[in-house]
Amino acid sequence: MNALPAPRNLVLIGGGHSHALILKHWGLSPRPDVRVTVINPGAVAAYSGMLPGFVAGHYPREALELDILRLAEFAGGCAVMGRATAIDRENRLVHIEGQPPIPYDIASVDIGITSAMPDLAGFADHGIPAKPLEAFATRWDAFRRKAHAGEIAPEVAIIGGGVAGAELALAMAYALRSVRNTQVSLIDHSNILSEIRPATRRAVLKALAKAGVQLRPQSRVAEVRADEVVFADGSTLPAQFTLGAAGARPYGWLTQTGLALQDGFIKVGPTLQSSDPRIFACGDCAHLTHAPRPKAGVFAVREAPVLFDNLQSALRDGSEARLRPYHPQKDYLKLVSLGRKSALADKSGLRVSGPLIWRWKDHIDRTFMKQVKYLPQASDKAI
Image 1 (tube, one colour):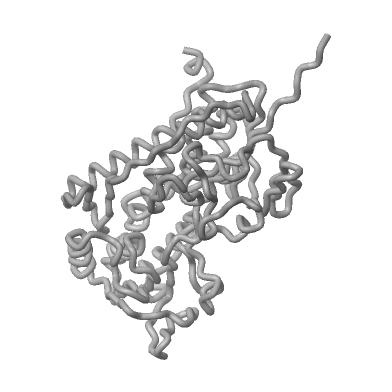
Image 2 (tube, rainbow, N blue to C red):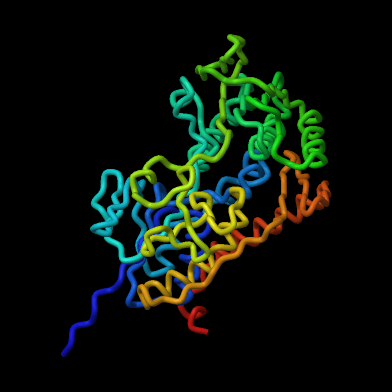
């Protein structure tokens, strides 16, 4: 009697939006010849689309949590709680901080980005990056409670005046609106919201002014202290909570993988394969060489079906696999939360804002979460 062949190992590095959907799809179409392992620092990952709503107080913490453990179980795989630190491509091993390495036949990387500022004095000790989201969400929840209880001064500084920084500034100002002497400041070394269309910029700047957010353009931060931000000119700004939201930075360990990178992000082609055909990448940590796009969750979500099919094909057919191409849209819908239950929609130069747009955005976000939270029973999957 011939022995059954050993199962192939699929390792999903990171619990990003694409991988959450991959686990859901895998559970609906399981393969007994494949062993699935997902590596993530924690049991849950946060959905970025609902983060401003959580910060503002519109959603409870659990509303934006992707249950990676439950998704892995549904997929018939296992979850390893740890932080990936390296990929040994020669021996096909993924190294994890404080744990044994995990072997792979095919791997996919979906670890997102970080807003950490390692070169800014004092930030590591006294600041918090907006990404990864999980640590920020925990720190903000604790600060908000203390501010409302009068245990800490409601002084917030956000470093980074892009759309993400503006959304979070508006959300924080709304969350602290009933606390006396609240001060929320949005800081950028250049101009605030310089990367978006002029009409959209004016609308968001108007919302920031209405919310009482102080703008500090052309201000370079030199140091972050426990209770203040120090600027390059020596002036200071009181801050009990300093958030880093400036730009999208790749994780440093990717530079040691030997994969082709673009500014630290993994280069992928239309099939979402890296320069090593056994390693795929998606979401914010990937750079689409055939169609460069901004870092936005919409692309990660839409990459998932293509990635799922290509992982299946690569595991089944190896180098002979015929893989699907992913072609991202050129102009995508941008939805900006405005603190209160109001949002702005911008696409193709058309702009609309108000409570109805927030309800639309809320519907889109909740629909995505339902996709990954509703996991049918075994009897339902067989139908």
